[in-house]
Amino acid sequence: MSSLELAAFAVFALVTLGFSAGVVLSKHAWHAALSLGGALLSVAVHYVMLDAAFVAAMQVLVYVGDVLVLLAFAVMLTDDEESDETEEVAA
Picture (cartoon, rainbow, N blue to C red):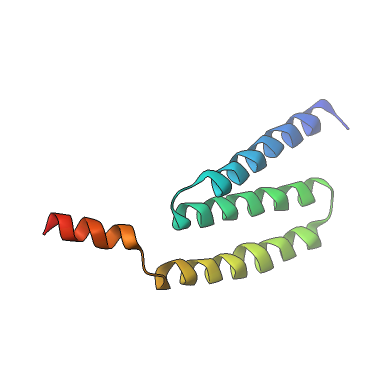
């Protein structure tokens, strides 16, 4: 493994850890879902670096595509209590 590959692996490992921390530490469900998408995309980059292009493509199609669409619908369809309170205060 060359030093460039090692540096790229380290950078994407930190990106994965950063997005994963964003999933856990985010107070808003929408921000957590977007952070999950970033984490899953960076895992797909790791698969590409391992010369597993098919697994990376399936990672993007199944997890990033389908799971994030499902999470987006779940976030949009749930009732956000904070937005109701801020609308009442503003009125």
